[in-house]
Length: 158
Image (cartoon, rainbow, N blue to C red; front, side, top):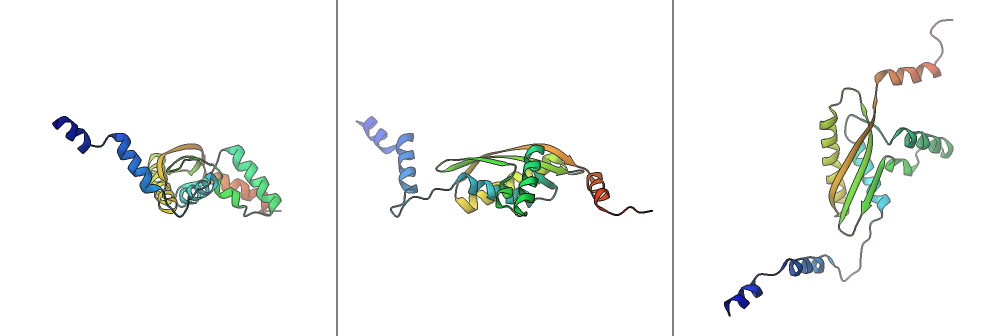
């Protein structure tokens, strides 16, 4: 007899999960957040961290530059460049490709990006971020800016 009371008093994992699901349902409707929305939030949050020079692999950056040149720049799609996400009903997973500035401590930078992206996505969407995978595709060297400037400027001597 006491065994029956103990089983009734301790809910199973399935019962607890069922109550959680019921608590997340809303009689007023269902909110669905598109992958692109989460990708843009993650992209903006990653770019806020000092030491992040650009996002996306070399090919993605090249395609983005061509797209911006054709469209006149400022394309809203470029915000999510270098970011891919999987969004479920209550969770999201994020993959980010970065180009970092030379001199940045990559492990510290990656940790800061993870913290900022997690905070932004969870605050704005209510989704739990289960993982953020970061791939450093390149490192930006100061000489890269100088060589780009040399081609556009007048020669120093004639």
